[in-house]
Length: 142
Image (cartoon, rainbow, N blue to C red; front, side, top):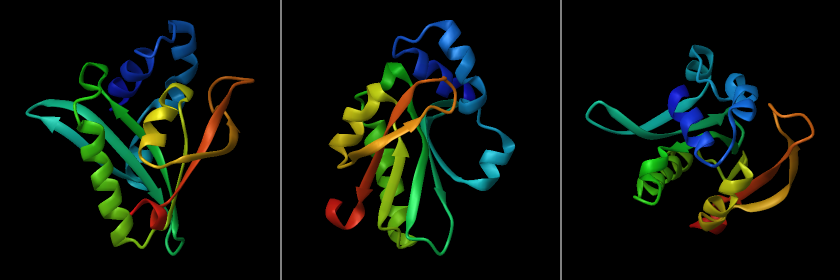
């Protein structure tokens, strides 16, 4: 998963120095696997994408922590299949609001899903860089 995250991010045009600063934040660790819910899209032995949802009951809010698709498979429908998993899980948990800190170059993908930019948050990896803070009210999306 970490390898997929890093390759997907770098395919957006980031150089090696930028990517080196992102390794800790993008690494999928055992602690992250235990603390969150993950769904992967794979074919045979190859993982082509995954998504991570963080939710603390009884809150009706949740956060998408990771949403990565292999660069060679973008536009193939994998993201929408993973999005369906998120929507199903949110319905099961009575989640009504989703947040995410978006990669700036991926904000248009999230906008197509119904997310709106509601502010900015500092990058967890890059000093003086801000990311779009996005929100989706699920009652409005259905």
